[in-house]
Image (cartoon, rainbow, N blue to C red; front, side, top):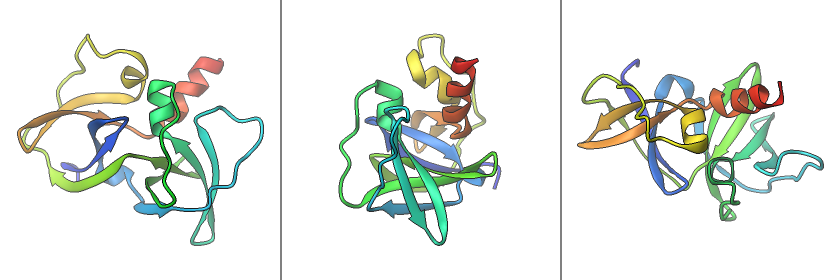
Length: 144
């Protein structure tokens, strides 16, 4: 599974996430708000007897809240023993990479640089490889 990637659209950009980092892909409904959290934390969501923290990926990357539909696609992953649902614009497919991951370009700015680990070619398109754990690590690093 080391060369399989989930392809999704986040903040209008196609991204790839290593398939072994993904627990599942779900439709999120009924997000419960939580007071006094970062603005990109949409709240909590119950999924199969687990509570997930829902992260608005677009808000995290751009600083502007994403439009959240009644049933919104989310990538579920486990980080540090906690489950998170990362809201994305859409889920496209699971694909094999055409080549090895390459280094990030120097022109990559803002939070994209914080969450990206490499560039990857899939179906003739070059896209950013995103590690969901970096959403959490980026905030921990800023707080320190």
